[in-house]
Image (cartoon, rainbow over all chains, first blue to last red; front, side, top):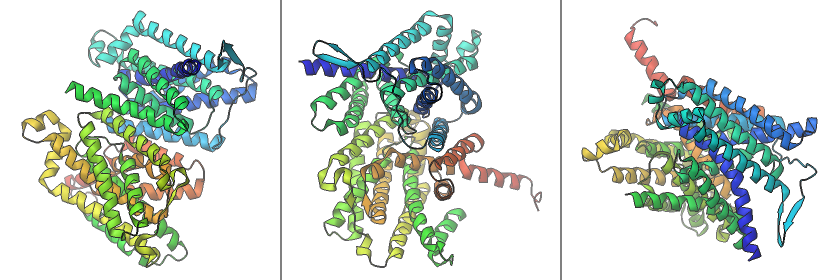
Length: 285
Length: 311
């Protein structure tokens, strides 16, 4: 019973950061219509930014969150302005290849600058556990989860309660009509892509404490974020929360209950997606 | 067409070119280039029906492991390679039947999921060495030394090219193009779209499996992340897009250029060498969206429109 509860808690805590990364990607895919393979790389840049700030200035990762978000917003906006905008009308394959090229560049620049080692930040509260009865969890994952939840709540308030948020959702639904209503589509694209990168950057800062910063950390998150938004249905931002939760729980259960489960975790992740996709397609037909 | 024959002829005579100490290195690098290019050609066949596959890493890996299993069970090399191709084809048939109602990115993610599940399964399969890797004997018991392995990979490249050319000359070419450009219209015109996609997938995955088998006999050692990794599928799709989609000369030229570039960068830059590869990709997409063959075709058209302007 305690093991079960502990497993569920682990899964829920992990779901927060997945949902954060995937919501960012959902903005890029849903609003801008760009299949962004560099999304995980934005996260990696955020993780290294946090690492550098911690090593050079001794800045606490909680403070770095703001810097990470701002820096990645600018990186995202610049990427959109310089590289994505010219291919907005190009075939989907070309767009995917372009973002893949950006991912390769970011990953290898990180390799050239930092080398291939994994780097972890150890703030004083790194290992502090919190115990409630027989259950225990680290303070870092808990704070990361709370922050993710708060940021996601802000994102939803923005999208569903502000005029600008309405404009973003209008552009997601239709590329032409918002222009007739004097919404500047290109500025919404810029905003959405910048926000998308900023969300990844924040997740990256958290990851530099929870997991590690390494040039290769991004790609796995790109894949998982894609898996989550595809399972949720493209453009369905609320669905992202549910599918992040389901997938994180599936991972946690396999890691706890399957003997030697470590190696199976990713297979289960992708198996769930595969079944969900195939089931949906056969039901719809 | 001329480009295709030129490249294949070059591949055949390469060992006879006197380049001294570089010979071994060039022949070695060329084999990997040929295998990767064959994989890219096979991916291109699938792409012709409009389906973006990320499962080609899995077909490649399944072919490699199945052929290796067969060779280790004393099956002659050609039969073992066929067995590898067959296993890849059967797996693709199962995948295809399950997923052909999916389109676009949904299909891409489903194939990616398939590929990752396969990699994990092989990672756990003790009878092929799991994470420790699986040794593979050389092709034809190592008879003939480096040239045997070299010409095996040339044969693979020639076969992939011939299949690709034959498809372009056949009625299937039009059926594939119709399926890609508008599935609903294609169905109305009497093109069995799902069957076309399955045929393309079968041909494509057999070639990918064959390429995997040849790869195993070249490296003599297989590791799940290397044989099955997502990077295989990505290489297989970057090359045709860089070279020119839905053509034969495009992936052929693109593959040899990109893989050579990769080797040069690896020698010059060392770790992080792929940064140059990324820059080439981004520049290529921004400035030559229809690949190398697109640029060449445009140059040719311009020359025709202004006769005598250049001479």
